[in-house]
Length: 147
Image (cartoon, helix red, strand yellow):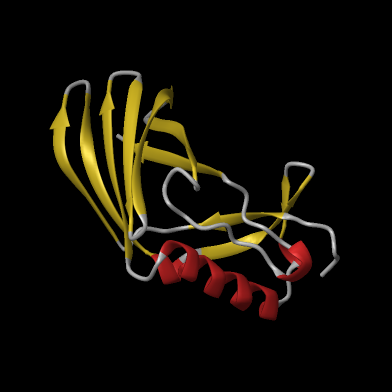
């Protein structure tokens, strides 16, 4: 790995997802993610994810640091959609936060992106030795649903 710091792209697939309420204008869903299952997709360079930049050892090290920063256990997401607006509340082992976001529609697919600060959620900084990598303070949660 180079000595230049990289932002990292991560992916979390829910272990559980259920719709708890449906209305004509939207609804509410609850999702549960396991912290230790967060997947490191790669380093972000020029707004593109480059998976080959990180070795398997780097990925294991980063995963351990992420689990240590967030805490073991679950992340819960509560998503509410009402018309063209959405709101997501994240509950992590180390903190909680809520963000609102606009909803866009393409056919039967609804998409929105909520933005959080990891620091505001209580997540400790995640960095590698000599700052070889770091997890950016920006957390973007993309929500996609099909009607």
